[in-house]
Amino acid sequence: MAAPALLPPPTMDEEGAAPPAPATPSPAPPPLQPEPKPPLLRRLPPVRVTSEFDSERRLFSHRLSCRVLDGVAKLRLRISHGAGGGGIPWGPPEVGVLARNFSVVVDPATRGAVLRGAADLAGSLRLRASHNTKNCQTGEQSYIHVGCSALCLSMSCNYEYDKSIVSCIQLDRCFQFKYHSRKLWRDDILVVTEQGRRQLSGKEQQGEVAITANLRDSPCKIELSSLVPPNALPRATFFFPNGEVSIKEKILDEGDRILSVNGLVKSHVLNGLCTAVYNDNAMNIKYRYKDDEISFVPSISLPSNTLSFAFKRQLTPLDKLSYWYNFDTNYWSAIYKHKANKHLKWKAGYESDNRLGWASLWVGDAGGSTKEVPFKAKVRLTLKVPQDNMRNSTVVFHVKKRWDF
Image (cartoon, rainbow, N blue to C red; front, side):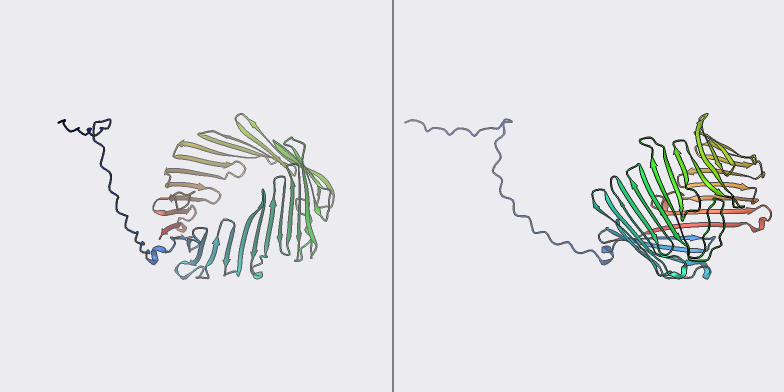
């Protein structure tokens, strides 16, 4: 009787291990439970409060701002009041809603509002408009600005009720037309200014028109401008890369008319910049030299022969000395600055014409915003000491603090 056949051994994988057993199906994950809603205070947008105090004006200023409409716009509230019951009392706050292409700022104190808007119409055509409404008792009138710009054409119009109209049309880079009109509603005396222009009286209208054209592809251009209504020959101005020259008709006090030439020329000389300005038979020549460590600016006025110079020396990367002297009046001033770091610096100076010495201390980035300074605050402290009467010394400080909630 033959032996029964043996079954073949199970196959092995490359590493010699038996294949894994079939995985059992995992149970279905439990249904997600809805997260509880955050408290009401956590659902409110973050609010930023900024307070400032100016001891010289004895004025407090507070500003509250927060993002609304899912961050599309910002709501701002600003209010000011005097310190210690003096100065400006509490008044109605200024409310504003600011967005990228639209903003509204309402000032109940003057019964005015400022509205601004912008829109892209098609391609490079853009429309901008602003409207400023003020109470007539303040002497300020409403103001409207509308501007459209395209690739080769730009137009703008400014209109201030009952006072002035300014219009400008520019075609590519070769031609520009500008018109300015101003209507006078108060009685003015007819006088002749130093520029030879008449001050009109009554309700007469005064305007100015200018046409500017480039000379082919060169950087030079010429401009013709005249008053409306005209009272003299048009003024011609020639612009070139190193300056400009203008010729106009000037009316003297005796009523004679002469041609006046004014100009400005600048050129690089000895690693510095020399500028000469000629106006009404007087010339001022100024030379400015500046490198990484020193700055020297002498100037002379002719024919009065008035000479002055300014000097600045960078002693170290953190220290700077500035000095100015006028040989005609013997007035001089000096300022020394020291910057410990980005958020701390001080400076001191003296002014001989006012006989005043002063010192100032900055805590916080003087040129930056409160977002970048430590402790979200900025402090400026200034001490003024008159040389004639030191008892009248004053201390002025300005504090700006920000809180985020």
